[in-house]
Image: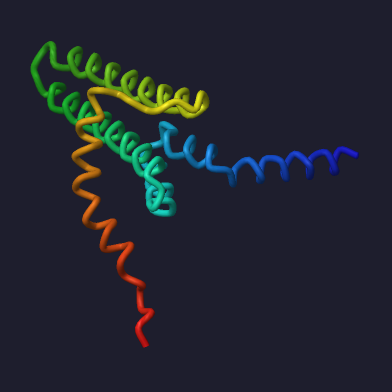
Length: 143
């Protein structure tokens, strides 16, 4: 009996993992590059591209915070305290933005983070010509 319940649970989990909501949540998870597969596989859908770019910008901000903390740690006496503070702030910011993204997905609301939206729009403008080329070519359909 327990094996059949386990199989049913696995089937339910598999069915959920194949939904669009699960893909969006996976893209927004605070794992460093979890947005890359979603961006690669679902780049023809604008909402997945936007969400993936928000997560990418979030990851870049976190890595910049870590780099800044590393540089500040080289200062004598107070550098380690500044580095620890910047490191903590970057972790909290990274987790907070990822949590907000997942929260907005669960509530099915539009994602608008004013500070990050400018960078996301800039990346979308950069990616748009590449996406047009991707849609036009047929990848070897010529005889």
